[in-house]
Length: 291
Image (tube, rainbow, N blue to C red; front, top):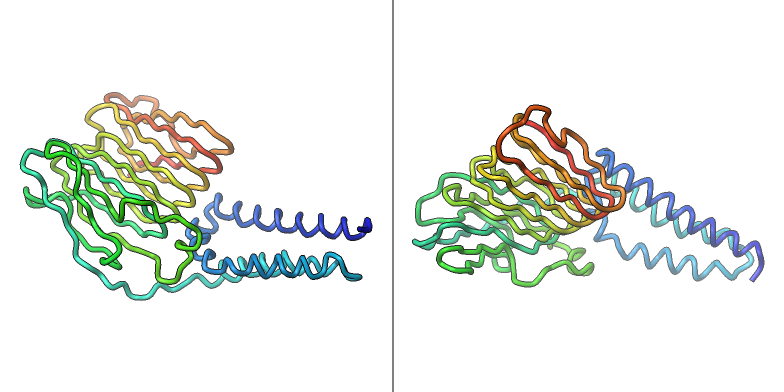
């Protein structure tokens, strides 16, 4: 192998890293939404095309043609950024779960990929915990478990749906438009990948929130806490916006690599119960805002 071939291989790798880094930077700065990567997933065979171009030309008399590999891959990403997918009209299915008579506290849980969420705490009939609608209802449903005193409502199925081939399959996008009971203390425990949307719990007595995953773009709206409340966010390449009342103290503990906290970590004169934020992982952005 000649020195010239080694140089062109390095140039090709360098262009790949520079290009991918540029797209990630556009996402972290809010120029592109994190949903960009969700829209790019169905184009994953382009990676095989790029690899094939590299294998063809790296040992020929024209090793500079290796540069076609990053140009094809990055060109496809540029196309996706300029031509976002237009979702088809959703085919909704009504869903809901009953509220056990002895329920004192409940949990909303789920493992979802490629999902658009619109979850809002509202006043529901006394015998209901969740009411709403979901796309692809035969595959995505609500399961009620747990105990009668502490029921657990799960979105989707028992097993995570996060494999690359599954997420990239056409028609896999799912939408959840749900009203959540605001009558009981609520825990939220979600594992998400390539999810977006809003979770509005401003009118609910939130007890604990834990959201894990990657490439999520979420807005979490909360009211004033009744007691000190934990908000835990774990994962990578997430953008989370937390909206809380302006006088509510927020304490943020960030642990990881290149995490960015934007906003007020702690109001100067805030008193009363506190939101304690655990922010762990890598390449995440947390914004704390007031209504």
